[in-house]
Amino acid sequence: MSDRQRLRQELVDFLNTVAKLGCHVNGVDDDTNLIDAGIVDSLALIEIVSYLEQNHGLDFRALGIDPGDLATIGGILAAIGRASE
Image (cartoon, rainbow, N blue to C red; front, side, top):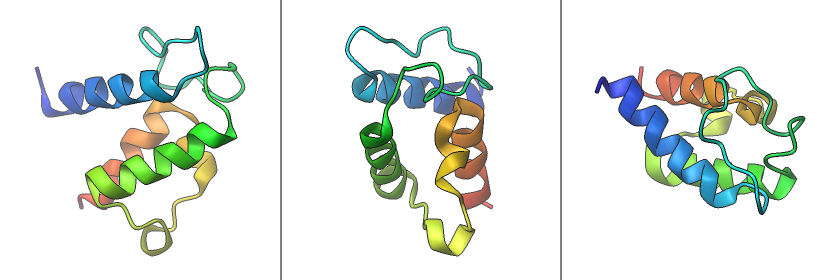
């Protein structure tokens, strides 16, 4: 498993913990808007930000990341990638 695949799986595992009751992130495309799809809500976005700050050292102000970038798995992975550059 590549680093990106491992990171994606860890992210999916986390997202499943903050997804709305009865919703799952497994099998969701990287470009699917999780909010529009009804999988996560605005409270979950706060939890996602906290997770990224604590587990990946993201500083949203320094990186200029818009919370809207966190609506997709691909957007979250890109934010993590920018933080590690």
